[in-house]
Length: 541
Image (cartoon, rainbow, N blue to C red):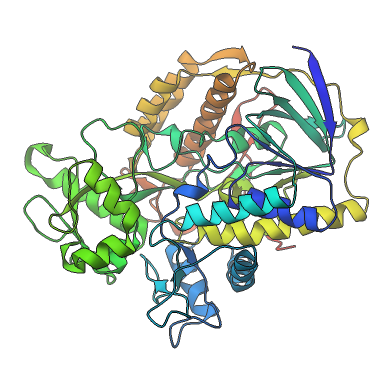
């Protein structure tokens, strides 16, 4: 294909979720020429589906005795020994200022009974009520609305329905722009000394997920092809309470926010027995990996394996409080014929969040000059082996802003490449597996429980089924990204011969102290994912 059009910018942001829009707004305010690229509509990403809220210890609204240090300790505990302590400390400390900036942009959060102080919820793994929320359980939608309105009011340029195909690179390997397919299927070239990946997650690797259809691991693939390492991909968090809509459910399934359990709901099995009793000191408010694994074990223990879901009993919350606090969950339940104020909600675990991603500092810098990452696509070290609830919007807000500052500093310091030095772009050719087959084998063999033989099956299936294809359409770009991301994930999962956080190996059920480190993956010259040694970025600059 021939390049049909060109554009220029100081910074290209790929993605319009919390991290991407925060970065774009901050960079625009710093005087940079910013261009935002998104493959769908601007609001059609993961952020608007986030229910729980933003975890932050706000000076004006916090539980007595709660501190930033306590929030950081909860984060490290959930991360099961793999958090970067410096990254945790920096991001958690940056949370209050980030929330205040968001409120100044117009985001409206729920207020407490006094009508002035922000209301706070508690979710799994948190030792205090510190999660601020909006619209009851529609925090992500309000965050997205506020950021998108601010970007449009500030005239931040956006290219909707433009698919990022590959980065442009100089002969020395620096990133110097982006190759994109527009809505008409024509190829365009955007020259820019800085590209920020804010593409979200990889939930579409699995048949059932809380993620929307756009979560296809695009940023992971772009980074790997650009020479950047990815890390901790084996840690895919399965949310324990996604609304069960029937056997064989596919695609995005409605989430039942963890905050419902924070208000007193409990998990029960088909007999009415408590699922989390005696499993963890926090019981139903244990970290997500613990709860999801407990549900999986309980279902496996049932005679004949007749049930594929458990129940969340929220009837004790009260009808009016439930409808007011959780309107999104309430409507989703009614759509499948369940009244959550009168009967338990059928739930099951589903793929939810990637704790790993593109190796980056908390300022968004990757090891590749000119390439930055923020949000779910990035591995800053905040989450470790398991993300603490409601730390994801927090990370996007904090790191997105800092990444914009990093780009501005790197531009001013002459540390980025001249886009005119970029090599002539060519449409990439990459292995593409059939999506339905990929999702079926990933769901069966790389879900909550994995073993070495099962992971080898996935590799064999992908090797036999993937076909090298030019990435000439959005579907091919996405399917190639899913194929490459799956290969990188199973490479890490096979190497991690232990169970830790949300990575559960049935053939290695205990943690191994020797593996209390992150595993990094790069591409070989032939395009195959390969474990890339043990060194990861530790700086928070």
